[in-house]
Structure formats: C-alpha cells, structure tokens
Length: 177
Image 1: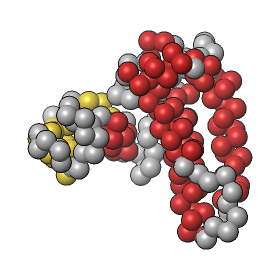
Image 2: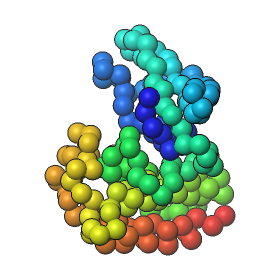
Image 3: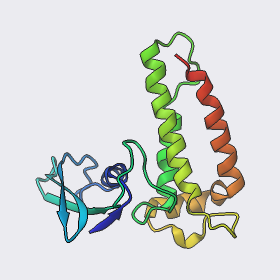
C-alpha cells in the first residue's frame, strides 16, 4: 500500500502514472474502507487501451484533509518534488495572461487552475530541509523529477520557489469576480 496524505494526493499519483502500455488515462472506480485500523482508498479499473486491470491501494492519513488539499506539512512519500514542479508549471501555463473580457465563470475557473499551481509549488517547498537552501538530490525519485532537476537545478532552490509562490499568490488578485 502507498502512503497518501490525502485523496487528492492519491489521485495525482494515479494521474502521473499511466499503464505499462503507455496509456496515460486511468479511468477508475474507488472506495474507502477500514483495514487493520487504517483508512484505505482502493482505486481500480482497466486500461482503455490494452484492457489490463489495475488496482492501487493507498493508506490515508488518519485526519482527512479538505477537498483540494494535497498534504499536510510533511513532504509526499509517493510524488517527488520534480513531479510537483511539473504539475505546477502545467497549471500555471493554462492560465491566460490577458483576463480582460472573461466571464465570471471563466475567471473562477482560471483562479482554480492558479490555486492548483500554487498548491503544487507549495508541495515542492516541503522537500527543502530547514537547514538547506534547496531540495536535496536524493528527493528526486521519478524519471521526470530527475530530468527536471538535471536541466534546471536552480528551480528547486528555496529563493526561486518562494519568489514564484509570491508572484502566483499576488496574481490571484486579478481573478476577482
């Protein structure tokens, strides 16, 4: 079983890891159950491309977090900092630069995307130990994460992450409806 800090983190994990055949989409059914005193989330389904059945089981933190919250103060044990940075970059790139002429619903949707970018970037910061100024190289466990770190190690420095977080958070003012 994989240790997920929240249902949101479990879903992100599934989104990041497709089928062995290369299919990225994993339609699933899920349910929560008690196993040995722990709350467990079980996700199951079949690959739409090759039909391979897949079941992934997560142990959840005893205190459930609100919807949309990825994790508590500790870093993830199943998603690495490079994957979180990648998710943040994708979300931030989906927010239009020019918000003029957008309807109230479009602004709300864009704000939610920006909030996802902020949440994912905040997760990257959790990997920086208090006595360090950057994410340690051993925190990168996925191929995507290792590649991002190799290409741009500066993006995993505390100052860079904090600067981007401030910028993204300041930008939320533009999404008033």
